[in-house]
Length: 254
Ligand code: NDP
Image (cartoon, rainbow, N blue to C red; front, side, top):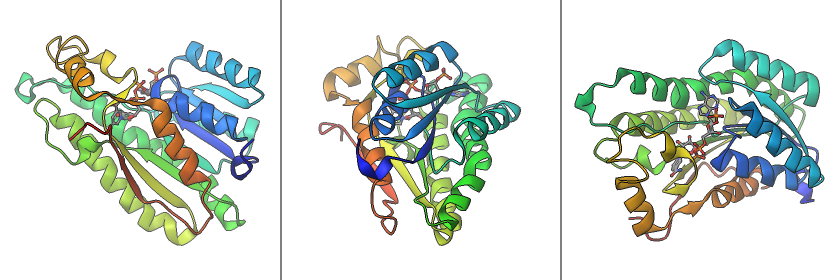
């Protein structure tokens, strides 16, 4: 195992697929105990089994970040089973593009509640642990997964982009509050990455068989493991080093 993460206890939201799953795999391979949070329990159990078979330690915890009681219950279970958490990776998110004038309040609400308030619920549940770990001299990290969409305007992605811009701003604010207490906050802003994110797009023209698929074809996406690698990197720096913000794009993405 990679020494800097041995003995660390991590929570990864969005661990059922994509970047969250890849990050959980990598952190476990580097020696951390990892709580796997997402809604699809079967997927979490599969991943936990895979991690255990590789010699790692993972705890599957079904949780919905849009539900406060669910997040609180997850935090209680993690505390009881793994103890104090010192690394939180908030990767759960949804991307539902559509023209603004379609007026899809259902999608707007879901994106805001998952991508913004969901991260806040996660932070609320685990910040006490991070601060306590840091106070005892341990490394303590909060990693948020925003998007390059926080910075660029892309037609039909207005609300998704707004949630990610909000998250980027929140991460900076959180860092200003937690940094003085020795908790590092890192906001990662990836570009196009090969995950399940696009599979929820219900607009055929914009989805994997339409515009999104064409972008993947033209640009060539990052792998989820490329983002996971960055999480492993930031968490294993000396405690004095905090990578505040990382924009990571496929080489061909403008
Ligand atoms: P995936 O769809 O593969 O992963 C998203 C994860 O979030 C899934 O594990 C899903 O599991 C979980 N999730 C969704 N809703 C909830 C919820 N309400 N409660 C708990 N978990 C939830 O996509 P990615 O890996 O790409 O997404 C990870 C993050 O990366 C997201 O925040 C996304 O916005 C961001 N991102 C992605 C980019 C890309 O090109 N792929 C680019 C830039 C940023 P389940 O459904 O089981 O709950």
